[in-house]
Amino acid sequence: MHPRPRHRQRLRARIIFSFLLLGFGLTTLFAVSTLGLRERIENQLVVDWLQAEANTYLTFKRAHPEPDAAYGLQEQQIEMFAYRPESPQIPLAWRNLPPGVHDWRDPDIRGRDADFKLAVARAPDIVTFIKYGYGRQALGAQQLMVVLGASVVAFTLLAWVVGVWSSRRVMRPVADLAARVEAFRGESALQPLAPHFAKDEVGQLAEALDDYAGQLTERVARDREFNADVSHELRTPLAVISGATELLLSSPDLPEKTRNRLLRISRATQQCTDLTTALLMLSRNERGNGRTDVRKLVEAQTEANRVHLATKPVTIRVDGQHDVFVEAPEAVLSVALNNLIGNACKYTAEGEVVVTVLADRVEVADTGPGIDAGDAERLFERGYRGTSSQGSKGAGIGLAIVRRLCDLYGWRVGLRPRADMRGSIAMLEFEP
Image: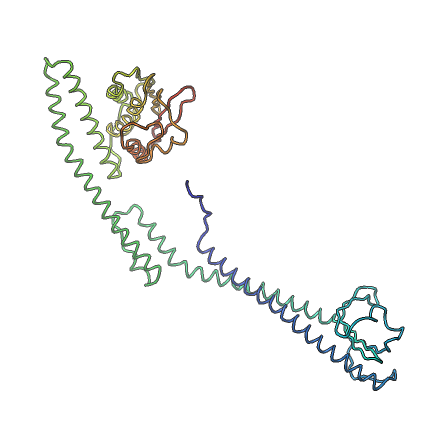
């Protein structure tokens, strides 16, 4: 099961977002904490003060019951009342309130609901009320909220500015490293990265890349040398086999059975030579020169793969156009076609194999067991064998080589099930 692709997000954007989130989160937490602490402390102070004033006022009115006795507390937001417990002047909603400070809401002179605190003090002979409207307190809280909100916005913007500045400083060496690595593409001689960076994390990454690039370059060079040496060494025995086979075939009195066997040896030798040439080109990642007659090569590969049919009730034929040419060495095209035609012949138990040459492609249709739609693309992976190939021999690398050759030359190769009958169609489409 393939992992789901992750949404691409630049590292610089992550840094800026982190600073932005940090600034917003800290200032918001500070603002909320300040408002909560202010409300709690202020409310407690107001409650304690009102309760004390209510008790003091009660004591004062007991000592000075006359209505014009002046009490020392003068505040615009405070109204004080003193009554005997049984007085009908006490508002009905206040009569049974216990001593203490109560949050209350009554209509004001404009008919709108007004919030205030009501402090109650009771004695057997007198009860006092202090009504404290905290409109100014609410206004102060509202102003504080505005100030704190502006602070949150200001500090968030400051965090964004700091994040942008910091991300530039942090990402500058990383971007420089990426640019230097990108500049290496296509260069044969790699220049060390580490001397261009400080001894920090980016410098350590540059040293690791230098070490990895050195190991990789050494391995690639060693593999190329090995492939070149093997290809060169294989050419000699293959040339000897080919020469000996041609010499034997030139004899006029060879039995037909022996001649057929020698022809099979000659075709196999040529296939090995072509495969050696193709693998050498892949190892060097370079195209060879040449111009190949596609129809002629298809007919030769079709004839060479008749051996896979043996005694099976299968017919094989070539259809399509003549005079179709491809700018590629014959060895490369031979390896690709041999794999596609050979697989069709091996896996077809009865019916037919039809190879069609068109102006821009070659199609190989068979009446074999067919392929699953899910296997169509994976069959070109190295070592993968489809469900229809169970019990057959092979390492599953032939189609992988074909895919690599197509990538080298800009061709396209594919497999698909036949829509009209059992079987599959292999297609090799050339570069337009």
